[in-house]
Length: 94
Length: 149
Image (cartoon, rainbow over all chains, first blue to last red; front, side, top):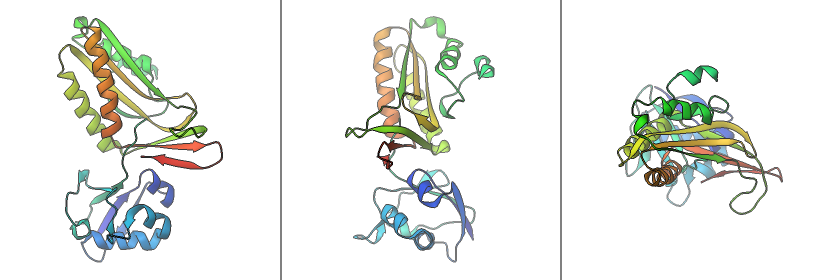
Protein backbone atom coordinates (compact mmCIF):
# COMPACT_ATOMS: atom_id res chain seq x y z
CA UNK A 1 0.00 0.00 0.00
CA UNK A 2 1.07 3.57 -0.63
CA UNK A 3 0.93 6.48 1.80
CA UNK A 4 1.98 10.08 1.45
CA UNK A 5 4.07 12.02 3.97
CA UNK A 6 3.85 15.82 4.19
CA UNK A 7 6.94 17.68 5.40
CA UNK A 8 6.92 20.99 7.26
CA UNK A 9 9.57 23.20 8.88
CA UNK A 10 12.65 21.14 9.94
CA UNK A 11 11.29 18.09 8.14
CA UNK A 12 11.16 20.06 4.88
CA UNK A 13 14.71 21.32 5.40
CA UNK A 14 16.04 17.81 6.09
CA UNK A 15 14.27 16.05 3.23
CA UNK A 16 14.38 18.92 0.74
CA UNK A 17 10.78 18.03 -0.16
CA UNK A 18 7.26 19.17 0.59
CA UNK A 19 5.84 15.65 0.34
CA UNK A 20 6.79 12.13 -0.59
CA UNK A 21 5.12 8.78 -1.22
CA UNK A 22 6.20 5.55 0.45
CA UNK A 23 5.20 2.01 -0.38
CA UNK A 24 4.68 0.05 2.84
CA UNK A 25 5.01 -3.70 3.29
CA UNK A 26 2.56 -3.66 6.22
CA UNK A 27 -0.03 -1.25 7.57
CA UNK A 28 1.72 -0.27 10.82
CA UNK A 29 3.07 3.25 11.26
CA UNK A 30 6.24 1.60 12.58
CA UNK A 31 7.10 0.46 9.05
CA UNK A 32 6.86 3.99 7.71
CA UNK A 33 9.07 5.29 10.54
CA UNK A 34 11.69 2.64 9.73
CA UNK A 35 11.71 3.71 6.08
CA UNK A 36 12.02 7.38 6.99
CA UNK A 37 14.87 6.82 9.44
CA UNK A 38 16.72 4.60 6.97
CA UNK A 39 16.37 7.13 4.16
CA UNK A 40 17.18 10.36 6.02
CA UNK A 41 19.40 8.94 8.79
CA UNK A 42 20.76 11.07 11.63
CA UNK A 43 19.22 14.49 11.01
CA UNK A 44 15.75 12.99 10.90
CA UNK A 45 16.43 10.54 13.75
CA UNK A 46 17.46 13.45 16.00
CA UNK A 47 14.17 15.16 15.29
CA UNK A 48 11.72 12.31 15.17
CA UNK A 49 13.04 9.55 17.38
CA UNK A 50 13.49 9.27 21.16
CA UNK A 51 16.34 6.83 21.86
CA UNK A 52 15.33 6.48 25.51
CA UNK A 53 11.79 5.34 24.86
CA UNK A 54 12.57 3.74 21.48
CA UNK A 55 9.52 5.51 20.12
CA UNK A 56 8.53 8.67 18.29
CA UNK A 57 9.57 11.76 20.27
CA UNK A 58 6.79 13.07 22.48
CA UNK A 59 7.43 16.56 21.03
CA UNK A 60 6.01 15.34 17.74
CA UNK A 61 2.31 15.48 16.87
CA UNK A 62 1.30 12.86 14.34
CA UNK A 63 -1.42 13.88 11.91
CA UNK A 64 -3.20 11.37 9.69
CA UNK A 65 -5.60 12.72 7.08
CA UNK A 66 -5.72 16.07 8.92
CA UNK A 67 -6.66 14.40 12.23
CA UNK A 68 -4.36 14.13 15.24
CA UNK A 69 -3.36 10.57 16.12
CA UNK A 70 -4.20 9.96 19.77
CA UNK A 71 -2.79 6.57 20.58
CA UNK A 72 -0.63 5.48 23.49
CA UNK A 73 1.88 3.73 21.25
CA UNK A 74 1.80 5.51 17.89
CA UNK A 75 4.11 2.92 16.31
CA UNK A 76 1.21 0.47 16.40
CA UNK A 77 -1.20 2.79 14.59
CA UNK A 78 -2.82 1.20 11.56
CA UNK A 79 -2.50 2.99 8.25
CA UNK A 80 -4.66 2.64 5.15
CA UNK A 81 -3.78 2.90 1.49
CA UNK A 82 -3.81 6.56 0.45
CA UNK A 83 -3.39 7.96 3.98
CA UNK A 84 -1.65 11.32 4.26
CA UNK A 85 0.66 11.59 7.26
CA UNK A 86 2.49 14.54 8.80
CA UNK A 87 4.87 14.80 11.74
CA UNK A 88 4.64 18.21 13.40
CA UNK A 89 6.94 19.98 15.83
CA UNK A 90 5.41 22.45 18.36
CA UNK A 91 4.08 25.50 16.53
CA UNK A 92 5.53 29.02 16.53
CA UNK A 93 3.34 31.61 14.85
CA UNK A 94 4.81 34.95 13.79
CA UNK B 1 -4.00 42.65 -5.11
CA UNK B 2 -6.58 45.11 -6.50
CA UNK B 3 -9.07 42.32 -7.15
CA UNK B 4 -8.97 41.51 -3.43
CA UNK B 5 -10.26 45.01 -2.67
CA UNK B 6 -13.62 43.94 -4.02
CA UNK B 7 -13.88 40.51 -2.45
CA UNK B 8 -14.49 39.07 0.98
CA UNK B 9 -11.17 38.26 2.67
CA UNK B 10 -11.37 35.01 4.58
CA UNK B 11 -9.19 34.44 7.62
CA UNK B 12 -6.39 31.94 7.06
CA UNK B 13 -2.96 31.35 5.59
CA UNK B 14 -1.81 33.36 2.54
CA UNK B 15 1.43 33.58 0.61
CA UNK B 16 3.57 36.66 1.22
CA UNK B 17 2.51 39.46 -1.10
CA UNK B 18 -0.93 37.99 -1.67
CA UNK B 19 -2.75 40.30 0.72
CA UNK B 20 -2.19 43.47 2.73
CA UNK B 21 -3.68 45.19 5.76
CA UNK B 22 -5.67 47.73 3.71
CA UNK B 23 -7.51 44.93 1.88
CA UNK B 24 -8.44 43.29 5.18
CA UNK B 25 -9.74 46.52 6.67
CA UNK B 26 -11.78 47.20 3.52
CA UNK B 27 -13.19 43.69 3.70
CA UNK B 28 -14.14 44.03 7.36
CA UNK B 29 -15.84 47.35 6.57
CA UNK B 30 -18.11 45.49 4.15
CA UNK B 31 -19.45 43.31 7.00
CA UNK B 32 -23.24 43.61 7.04
CA UNK B 33 -23.12 44.68 10.72
CA UNK B 34 -20.23 47.14 10.44
CA UNK B 35 -22.48 50.09 11.29
CA UNK B 36 -22.70 48.70 14.83
CA UNK B 37 -18.91 49.10 15.19
CA UNK B 38 -17.28 52.12 16.77
CA UNK B 39 -13.69 51.01 16.29
CA UNK B 40 -11.41 48.86 14.18
CA UNK B 41 -8.30 47.51 15.89
CA UNK B 42 -5.31 46.08 14.05
CA UNK B 43 -2.27 44.07 15.07
CA UNK B 44 0.61 43.50 12.65
CA UNK B 45 3.35 41.03 13.56
CA UNK B 46 6.63 41.87 11.80
CA UNK B 47 10.14 40.42 11.60
CA UNK B 48 12.34 41.61 14.50
CA UNK B 49 16.09 42.03 14.04
CA UNK B 50 16.99 40.01 17.11
CA UNK B 51 15.95 36.62 18.47
CA UNK B 52 14.53 36.14 21.97
CA UNK B 53 18.10 35.44 23.13
CA UNK B 54 19.43 38.58 21.44
CA UNK B 55 21.04 36.87 18.45
CA UNK B 56 21.06 39.11 15.34
CA UNK B 57 18.44 38.00 12.81
CA UNK B 58 18.73 38.83 9.10
CA UNK B 59 15.62 37.12 7.69
CA UNK B 60 12.80 34.74 8.55
CA UNK B 61 10.98 31.86 6.92
CA UNK B 62 7.39 30.95 7.75
CA UNK B 63 6.00 27.52 6.91
CA UNK B 64 2.43 26.35 7.46
CA UNK B 65 0.25 23.26 7.24
CA UNK B 66 -2.50 25.18 5.46
CA UNK B 67 -5.39 22.74 6.02
CA UNK B 68 -4.85 22.50 9.77
CA UNK B 69 -3.90 26.15 10.25
CA UNK B 70 -6.94 27.41 8.33
CA UNK B 71 -9.22 25.21 10.40
CA UNK B 72 -7.70 26.47 13.68
CA UNK B 73 -7.81 30.11 12.59
CA UNK B 74 -11.49 29.83 11.67
CA UNK B 75 -12.25 28.25 15.06
CA UNK B 76 -10.42 31.06 16.89
CA UNK B 77 -12.30 33.71 14.89
CA UNK B 78 -15.67 32.00 15.42
CA UNK B 79 -15.05 31.75 19.18
CA UNK B 80 -13.92 35.36 19.57
CA UNK B 81 -16.75 36.68 17.40
CA UNK B 82 -19.13 35.40 20.09
CA UNK B 83 -17.61 37.84 22.61
CA UNK B 84 -19.81 40.77 23.60
CA UNK B 85 -19.43 43.79 21.35
CA UNK B 86 -17.33 42.06 18.68
CA UNK B 87 -18.68 42.72 15.19
CA UNK B 88 -16.05 40.92 13.11
CA UNK B 89 -12.54 39.52 13.37
CA UNK B 90 -10.03 38.40 10.78
CA UNK B 91 -6.70 36.66 11.29
CA UNK B 92 -4.40 36.49 8.29
CA UNK B 93 -1.03 34.71 8.61
CA UNK B 94 1.45 35.01 5.76
CA UNK B 95 4.00 32.37 4.77
CA UNK B 96 7.19 32.49 2.72
CA UNK B 97 10.56 34.23 3.04
CA UNK B 98 10.65 37.56 4.87
CA UNK B 99 13.16 40.36 5.36
CA UNK B 100 13.49 42.42 8.54
CA UNK B 101 10.40 44.49 9.40
CA UNK B 102 8.22 42.80 6.79
CA UNK B 103 4.67 41.90 7.80
CA UNK B 104 4.04 38.32 8.97
CA UNK B 105 0.55 38.36 10.42
CA UNK B 106 -2.49 40.62 10.65
CA UNK B 107 -5.30 40.55 13.20
CA UNK B 108 -8.17 42.96 12.59
CA UNK B 109 -11.08 43.33 14.99
CA UNK B 110 -14.17 45.51 14.58
CA UNK B 111 -15.88 46.18 17.89
CA UNK B 112 -18.76 48.26 19.20
CA UNK B 113 -16.48 49.93 21.74
CA UNK B 114 -12.71 50.16 22.04
CA UNK B 115 -12.33 48.30 25.35
CA UNK B 116 -13.59 44.92 24.07
CA UNK B 117 -11.69 45.41 20.81
CA UNK B 118 -8.35 45.83 22.60
CA UNK B 119 -9.06 42.80 24.78
CA UNK B 120 -10.10 40.51 21.93
CA UNK B 121 -7.19 41.46 19.68
CA UNK B 122 -4.78 40.58 22.49
CA UNK B 123 -6.54 37.24 23.07
CA UNK B 124 -6.50 36.51 19.33
CA UNK B 125 -2.71 36.95 19.20
CA UNK B 126 -2.21 34.66 22.20
CA UNK B 127 -4.46 32.03 20.62
CA UNK B 128 -2.97 31.97 17.13
CA UNK B 129 0.58 31.78 18.50
CA UNK B 130 -0.37 28.70 20.51
CA UNK B 131 -2.85 26.90 18.29
CA UNK B 132 -2.15 27.19 14.58
CA UNK B 133 0.10 24.92 12.53
CA UNK B 134 2.65 27.57 11.58
CA UNK B 135 6.40 27.52 12.17
CA UNK B 136 9.02 30.24 11.93
CA UNK B 137 12.71 29.86 11.18
CA UNK B 138 15.06 32.66 12.17
CA UNK B 139 18.09 33.09 9.90
CA UNK B 140 20.96 34.62 11.85
CA UNK B 141 23.73 37.03 10.87
CA UNK B 142 26.35 34.32 11.57
CA UNK B 143 24.88 32.12 8.80
CA UNK B 144 23.05 29.67 11.07
CA UNK B 145 19.28 29.17 11.25
CA UNK B 146 16.88 27.86 13.85
CA UNK B 147 13.23 26.78 13.78
CA UNK B 148 11.60 28.34 16.84
CA UNK B 149 9.37 26.23 19.11
